[in-house]
Length: 191
Image (tube, rainbow, N blue to C red):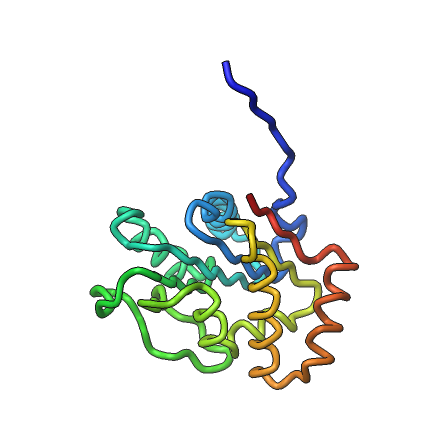
């Protein structure tokens, strides 16, 4: 026998499927978002209108995740989520079907946008326009699932930097972050 604990997850799908969602995951932190994306696909197939969602996912090596890129591309092609994949321990060029062209404000990528040799924080700042559009959307949710340690703190600073690049002052960005925390619009599940 070994000791174990079960804790209720703070990550829940929004009650209103039109709620804009920013999801940020590291490695196996993708699992809860995968179920959210599957639910959104099912709702979409039933004709339910969905709010925008973007997924920023960081992994070490593409080979560790098998056919995940194909699944991520499916979410993009079906309008379920904008998807940005950061592969930190590889520096090769994108695989066939990957779109590495910077996006312009308001444009939805049709395939996964991959960043090689960088972390999810780089992906967020590189795509600050899309991130800022989602971050400033009314009634949005920001969800993080992944490693604990310094990551949540680093992620907070990265988000502030992305908002500054987007055109919001540092003071306004920090105030927005605190407001979102107070309003229960930011959820971190870190271990």
